[in-house]
Image (cartoon, rainbow, N blue to C red; front, side):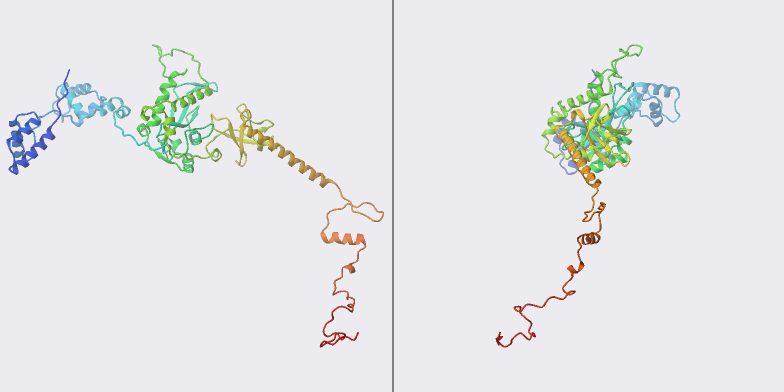
Length: 520
C-alpha cells in the first residue's frame, strides 16, 4: 500500500528560521534553541545550521532550493482539454506532433503528475463530463434556517412517470413551495404539461391558505427564492407576491445549491414515489432496450395526483436528519413565530385557474366536471351565463364571475359537500326571494285597481287619478259646496265690536283714569 506523501513544511521552516535569525541578531541564539528546532522537524542540528546559512545568504529569508520539475505549457493544457482531460491521449498527440515552443516531452508518468498539479480534481471532472460534474466537487455553505415562513424555495420537477391524460400518455409537472426553516411542503400545483405562471399562482394560493383543505403548513413568507424561470419572474407573479408583501429573490440560473431544500424534495420524490409507480420512465429494460412490462397499467391523472398528495403528507410527517430526526410537522409546530395569512376571498382574483368557456346556471346550480355547484345568490339567475375559476385538486369550492364585466358574483360549493350552514343559507335565500316576489305582486295588484271619485248626484263614475294638491283641494271644495269666504282672514272681514266687560285701550272714552270709579 502506497503511503501518503509527507506534508510540505517549507513555510513552517521559514518561520522557525526567521525566529532564529532574530534571536541571533539580538545575541540570544544558543545551541539549545537550535536543537529544539531540529527536534521539532525531526532533522539533525547541522541541517538547521544549513537553513540559517541559507537565510543569511538571502538577506535573512529562508529560500530553499527547489527541484526542477516538468510543468505544462498553455499549448499542452489546450491539448489536454481537447482530449476531455485524457492525459494519455494528450501525451500521444504531443509526442507525435510536438509544438516548437514546448519543452521536451517527459515520460508518460511524469506528464500525468504534471497534469494533476496543473488541474484540480474539479477541473479534470469538468473536462471529462462537463459543468455538472465539476460542480459536484464544489463546496457549498449552509444558510441559517431562521424561523417558519422566513424564506421559501420553489421549483418545478417533471415526474418520471407517464400517466393517462385525455387518452394520451404524458409526464406531469409538479411545482413545490418549501419552507426553508423546517423543510415542510407548504403548497404545490400539478399540471399535465410544463407549468406556466398560472401553475405558480395556484401553488402560491395552496401554500398561503390555511384552512380545512390547506395547511397546517403555510402563511405569508418574507422571502421566496426562485431560479431564473420566466414563469417565476413574470409581472403577474411579481404583482401577486408584492400584494402579499413577500420579496422575490431571483437566484442565478442552474444553481441548485441556492435552493437545497426544494432540490432535496425533488430528488426524494423521484426515488421514493415515482420509482414505484407504473409507467416509470427510468425502469430497467431488457437487453434490446425494450421495457420489461410493455403495457403497464398506467395511472390516470386524477389517481396520480392522489398519490402525490399522499406522498406529501408522508414527507411532512417523517423524520429528517437535517432536523435532528424531527419530522417537518414537529419542527413546524415547535416554532413560535407568528403565522400571517389571508382569507380565501382575498386571493381568488389572481390565484385561481380559469375555466375556458362560459357555463350556464340551471336549477341544479352550475355543472362543472360532472359536479353541481350551488350558492344562495344563484336564486333567480337560472339561464344566466357565468365564467368559473377554480383551484385544481381542491374541487369543493369554485368562484363565479360575470362573463361580460368580469365582476365577481360569489363562490359556489359542491352540492353533495355543502355544510349545514351553507344549506341553511340557501333555504334562507329562497325564502327571501319568495317574500320579495310576494311584496312586488301585492304592490302591482294594488296599482292595477282603478279608483273612482265619490259623487253626490246621479252621474257616471269618474276614474280617480292622482291630482296635484291645489287641484285636489279645489275638487273637494267644489264637491262640498264650500265657499272661500269661510276661510277669510281677520284683516279681510271686520270683526264684531268687543263686549262691555273686555279691557279697553287708554284712549277709550269709557275708560276712567286716576282711580275714578265708573258711576255705573
